[in-house]
Image 1 (tube, rainbow, N blue to C red):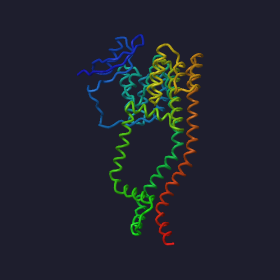
Image 2: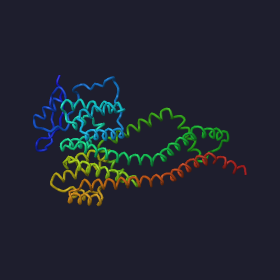
Image 3: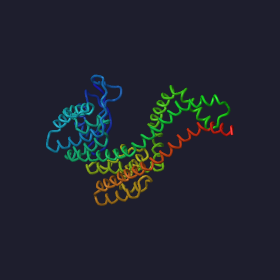
Image 4: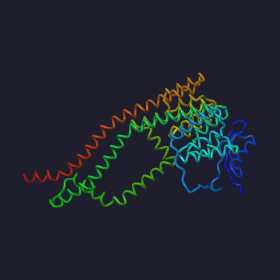
Length: 405
């Protein structure tokens, strides 16, 4: 039975065409579109049609960014050595240790052998090969420089992984300290405070306010822990789903950019991602409007994404990129000037990569400084909390001693 497929393609003039066709599989649809003179961008089965069969009923293992970097680098090396595309994919599938990535490569190989372009075959697996990846591969296929483009992708991925590793490394100690502090406070409230509560009951009399608060909190935790945990998990899940709502996401992303200290890091990361993505796409020969569309979808912040959309709309009307960037409150003057110089000199990709490298260094420096500042602040905070608990426990004894005197 024929299945209905939604497709996205470009005609000879570069105009995006969308629609649906019925066919036996994606390969047949791709062949039909090529006969119509279209360049295929993506083909996906419409919801409610066809079957999604998972062999063995197992879920594919998630592909880590490091594994994708290795795949991309080795893939580029084999393409550069002159091996046929199908042979490269076959070799990569056989030597990849991750079963999820192996299954994905095998699917891509099957589609490529069926006549689908590599970029279109990869676009069917967005959780592994994102929009940026597929756009660059498509540009490499068009320009006949697939090996060079794959090398650029690997470089970009390695840069992103490097900055992510620095952030994780800098935040590991503060996070561990926070977790240990929370565990210590909970242990005191659950096991130590009840011992003192029994003593206070034997002594009688009114307890000081701090002690009353501490005893009440301890009793609340002991009587509600059994449903407090699932409620906390449900609340966290609800908040996460709520943030996925477009309007809420936009509001949250806007707030993140305005937060003290942290907002600066978030903005620097967004600017680095914007510059590196646009620069990498430009160096691969991707048309500027298509590159801006990819950047809009991959920049990682709804507010910045909207600003990129405004830039794309202005470029479509004939303006330079620097003109709408200069009117935006998100992009600083340095970025605007570097883009303007790049457009004038014809080396915008080089300028953008320099901007990305600058902001990557800024992020690393800021995170290191923030980490060194957080550690003493957390030590002081933990000391104050534990000290406050101990003082609250001993206040009734101090009061009783004062009465005896």
